[in-house]
Length: 109
Image 1 (tube, rainbow, N blue to C red):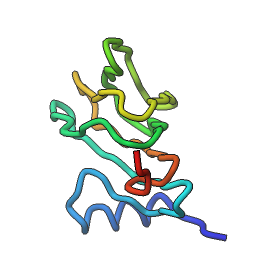
Image 2 (tube, helix red, strand yellow):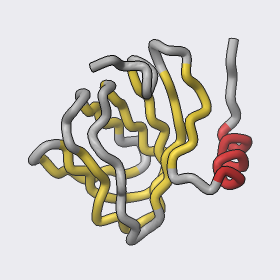
Image 3 (cartoon, one colour):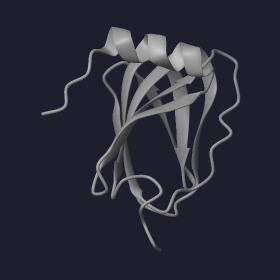
């Protein structure tokens, strides 16, 4: 078993000074914490893996392909591999759990 406490992940991510902090990669699945500040810009590019976002806290919009929708604490968004997507109009700091399948960086697409 592998288990994680969000408070510990917050501390480890702060020490890493990165917007995205991967804390699990098992090949078929990876997980990370992604944070973006209010008013910030989301620099990500499309991924080779399918992805699910679970918004823990914050408010923003997400664009997936040509579609926009608001997100807030409790929102869950699926994004298929290779589809352009990004968060924008971030009005409250975003705290997001990210799930990749297969694990990020393991796809050979």
